[in-house]
Length: 235
Image 1 (tube, rainbow, N blue to C red):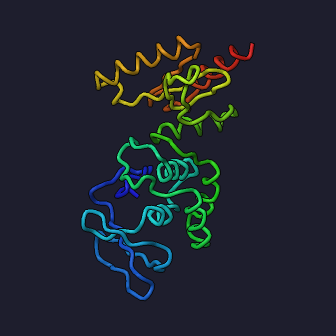
Image 2 (image 1 turned 135 degrees about the horizontal axis):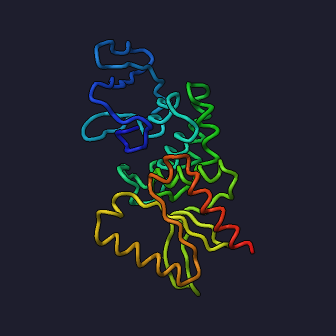
Image 3 (image 1 turned 180 degrees about the vertical axis):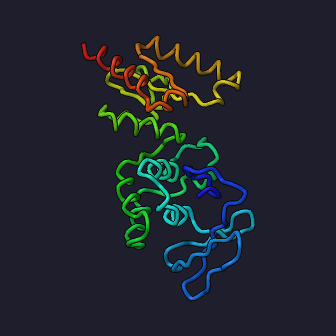
C-alpha cells in the first residue's frame, strides 16, 4: 500500500519485513526480513514501479486488509478512487481505481483476511476526497449521528465560483475545512485560506476550521461546534 501512497495506519519502520508475493506454484521466500505470500495470478496485475515489479494498488489493499479497521479501509479506498490531483503522497494514475473495479475484484478474490472490512467500507467511500483527514472527519460526523457532509463542495453565487470546501452542508451553508500543517507554514496558502474564509462568510456561510488536534480527543469539541452551527441554521 505504501508504495502507491495509499494511507496505512502504521508508519513504515526500517526493520519491517518486506512482503514478497509469488505464484501458487512457487515456494515463497523464507529469509530474514522477508514475508512471502502465494497469490494466484488472476488476483493481481504485476506493474513496474521505479524499476521494481509490484502488485497493483487494489491487490495491495486486499493483501493488507486483515490489518485494517473499518475506518482505515474507508480512508484507503477514498485514496484509491479519488480524482483529486493533490492527495498527499499518492502515486497518480488518475484515479488508481474505481468503486466498480474494486467491487468486481472483491467478487473475484472471494474470501480472504479482511474481506468483510473491505465489503463494509465500499458503501462508505467517496470520490474527490483530498486527504486522509477529510475522510476521518467525515466518518467522525457520521459515527456521531450527524448528517453526512458533501465532499469537496463548490460554492457558487449565480454561477460565479466562490470557493471549494472540504466538507459542506450546502442547505445550511456550513463549511468544514481541515487545515494541515501546509496551510500553516506556506505563507501564500495561509493568505489564500484567509481570503477564502472571508469570501464564504460574505456569502452567508459559517466556516468551521479544524486541525489534527480537533480529532485527537474523539472530536467532542468539534462535534459540539458543528451541532451548534446546524441548530443555528435550523431556527
